[in-house]
Image (cartoon, rainbow, N blue to C red; front, top):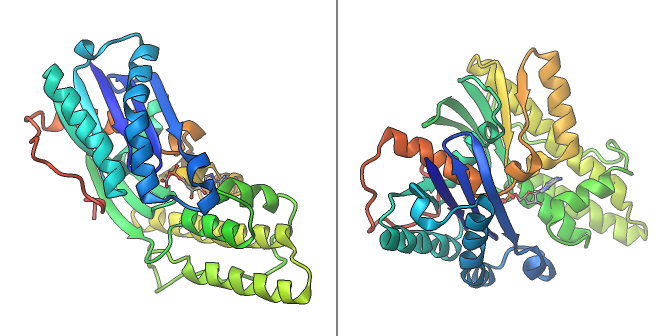
Length: 334
Ligand code: KG4
């Protein structure tokens, strides 16, 4: 079975062709970073306009690289939400049009389920149940994954997502956009204990997150340092990054303990972070947990994971998908 995946939930236009649940035949991502960089964040109107320009060439390129054409595609899987409504509409309507002209089955996919399953794109054997930490620019959530279509939300951020905090700290320090990799690069030369930034543990046993207080603490520290005439950027970045990583790792381990899972999976753009990867690896080892880290190309937004999630959803319920279906801005996983 050949599945064409389409993803346009935020600022990346992506298309992929997947053969069953195994082989990624093509995975094309067109980034809009250069468009949004000067604003220090994604501008929704610019994002949807750019998707409009890119969607057709990106899909054509994916089909070409996979050595296939639309009539050979058996299923079109498109991100239906969550995300920016204008951005989502571009991919979702484009997918509907393709499905309609080619009479190909069509399915809408919750973007989060793509992240939850992306580890399988590498042909790895991962057993259910596992705990998934999905941490990106729009999400920081913990899930218990019991099957390919069976997920329970255990906790989520109550304010900023971790990636959003990285991007905002980069903006405060005038480092550029997207902020995560830039903050992380500066952090390599800084001291993790130069500043004692707050960690929001929330109520006892809570698996929710909160990063807005941390962001404010960085802002206040930056202002004090500026007044004093010396801004130790690397130290601020390292101390901030460590505060984020401590909370992400600790809460993930707590989730595994609470739900008696022996496997942990990461997903989302922030899981590219080196300090997070090494700290999670070390802690999982010490706690006898198996850890699976997807390759960077499958951590960030991509359409291969959407094709995969669509495939499993379609196997479970191959009923015709309604062409009246609309996009949604919040994940339907809870
Ligand atoms: O999953 P993703 O590609 O897309 C959306 O959230 O839409 O994640 C992007 C986020 C951005 O906030 C970016 O700053 C962050 O992931 N990010 C990182 C790193 N690479 C990307 N954050 C920390 N360290 C990194 N190395």
